[in-house]
Image (tube, rainbow over all chains, first blue to last red; front, side, top):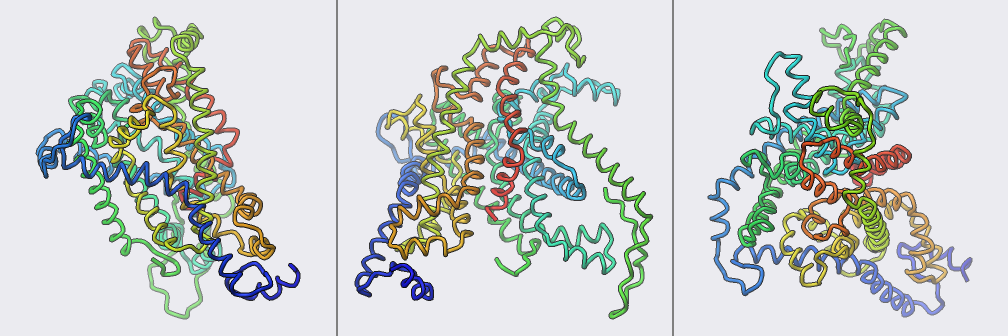
Length: 321
Length: 304
């Protein structure tokens, strides 16, 4: 049966079992097949509905309500949003979060591009990849705890700076400005390796013939980089930028541990820390949910801006997207 | 960084004129010198990257008097293992490791099976609403888990999963739109002929999935397993909110509570605890670095 069926069926677009009996049997198989589609997406569909969609809808509802976690909801309209948007602590959290994103994303990705281009020129690079990638596989808690000790006022970093520049040892985690910079340093340190390997993989995917052709046209190393490699890499850089922005808007672990509870004086308070503090510290579930929704809106707006801007900066080889 | 021996390109080249040859490079010696400088710079950068780990290890072997008297010294003198003995006996690292490992294994297995199933259906089974559902899956990826954290907590409370590992396992395994997306990409890259023969034979979708698709999906599954294991292992916010009992703690959560318990005067002890929490992972990473780095690169490229 198989040998006979294969020849005829292979020519058709839709493949169905070669059963003698024609259309009716075919559609029965397809109907059963369609049911299998639902069975296969079933577990994830159920999980997504229960653990993402339902909590998300609940978050939307809670944002417009007052709730103590036990009794009935009381509707308050936009009060929670009004409270949050006029709360200086939340304003600070938004500014800090945006600052962290605007510092770590360009610096981190720029550094990663430079390192990836340098690594691509080398034949032996395993050692460097291991060294740069090690922080990526380390838990953010351990990372923050190690750096917390490195940033001590009597610690190696401050001592080194004091000795080299003959200044008073900086108090990294005690000074409000330096604390935010410390958070950025740790964020970049722990994520740069990931982007290096992504960009390196992207560079290795560039066809050598394109680079060779440009070189034969007399392009120097800098021209090759800015006119050939960077444009060809730009879709990947764009993708990484979007991801990096989204994840830096969610900064929590580092400010929670490195700058114990987003100190000093809330200098490193981020939006997610604010949500955590309101929800699980002060049990203000309504305002915390309003802050969550604002975080989502900020994320969507920034991602939208990036997608709009990419048309200008991102080069797609096949003209797609 | 790349000091280009710039060819004289001041005058615009007339169209059709022969391309000027490569700039007269100073030969092999210069290239080798440049490579050496590159190696030196990268090595320096790499050492800066691992310095925090090295410093953690060195500090973990120091005694409290040395930390107080000579905070800037690098080498432990005298050398002590007491910090490790103390850290290990002060908090249950053994059970934290066991908790983290078994949670990660269950999340990985659950995610692989359900995400491969859904990815296969979205890629190859024509069913009504498939396109809309897939777009919805992609859209939910835009909702950060932090946005739904509070209702999620109350849902877990309703299910009786607060202070239980179930809250860390079941939702993670059953709701991972990125994994579904990645698996769909991997299934799409398999040749259609693979399953056609089986369909012609009259095999059911379930059998095709288990005996044709899954075995061929092995590289993709391996990559996804590594990504999911890493993110589960390092997850902090959710265990922090869900778990209260110390014997249920995961490694990151235990490490964090350790700092709270012991302050930061004897940071040799804290560094020993950090070393206990990180060194096994780092060793595992060095052993499997090729596959781990490859998987993370693949996921960063969106499964391309």
